[in-house]
Amino acid sequence: MIVMMVLFDLQEKLERVSIGRLDSMHYLQPIAPPSQHLPKLTVEEHDEVKFISVSGRTKNEQGISLSLGDIPELRQGDRITITGRVARGAPSTSWSLALFSSVGESNQLVQHLSPKSLFTLTHVLEEIELEAIFTLRTVQWGDAIPAMDIFVDSILITRAREMVTFLKDEREVVYSLQTDDYIQWTNIGVGNNFESSRFLQRSGRPTLTLFRTGLVHGIHVTNRNKDFDGVDILLERLGLMKGNEYHVQVTGRVDGDAPNYAQIMFQSVPHFSIRDNQLIYSNEPFVLNHTLRRSALEKWVMLRITTNLPGAKVSFFIDSIDIRRVESIYEF
Image 1 (cartoon, rainbow, N blue to C red):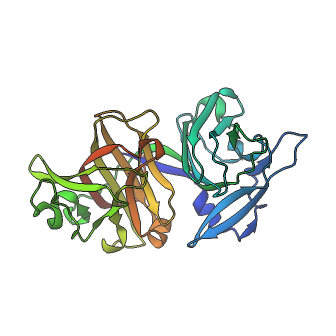
Image 2 (image 1 turned 180 degrees about the vertical axis):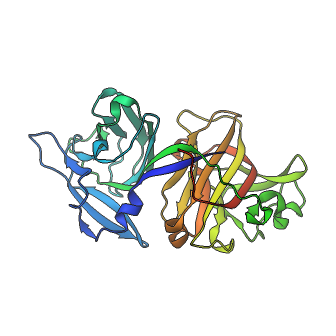
Image 3 (image 1 turned 60 degrees about the vertical axis):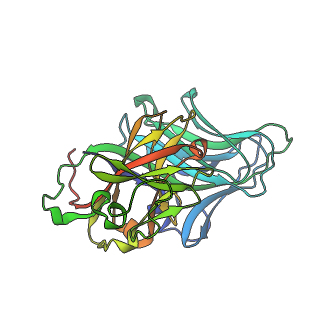
């Protein structure tokens, strides 16, 4: 089974950083053209979760840079995922947020945003980019002075790895959708949902309907209007031990059309950062994988199955949810 090995996790770095001006991470720096002032980078905290604020911006070109050359052992094919938000006071004009590589605009990633919205930017590294400096900034049209702040919630660099040590004992399965009596013993059909489930709950206000897939019930998530409309896995109720690691896998299918740039994802709660995400396509299947480690078990209360902003109205089926204890040994 393919899972993601974490090479760099900004949230783990921020746990050791004090609130205030950020000056202890050499791989993260404010950036601006020579003729402009540098924005201010500070570490802030909300609900015990830290993030980086990029403030004092007056021009499109001002932002934050990430130096990959300062992160060891990166390889071609490793994936960067950056998630964040823009300030509440952002103007209501049309604008986008972009991640640029130092090797040229051919590698530019752009996500169009509205005020207050979240963003997720994902890029698979090419060999020429392993020493590159990436810059994160906004581009805005319609206002003379684009002054919105950027909040960087997470930067995650991962590598696909083959997990070779799933424990054989069936007792190591701590949760499976197909054996969840709260779901499997409920009649299927419109109006029959799992409000009484002990381990899963609704996120936002979608319609959750049970359906039969093979011999067991799955979950149909419809009437979505927000990117956070989905299903929460209640980690606190699963009896997970902080000294262990647990692999979470969700399989499902897109129901109907999916627009360009739509992604299905795992989102940590209350961090609200992206832990696995992938592009989804109309009527196509998907698989999400994530390994819960010590830092996650100490701070997270839920793992959310949802989409990014472009996929906010996409309906989807959840065919399976499987959580089991694993040993922390990987094949390199």
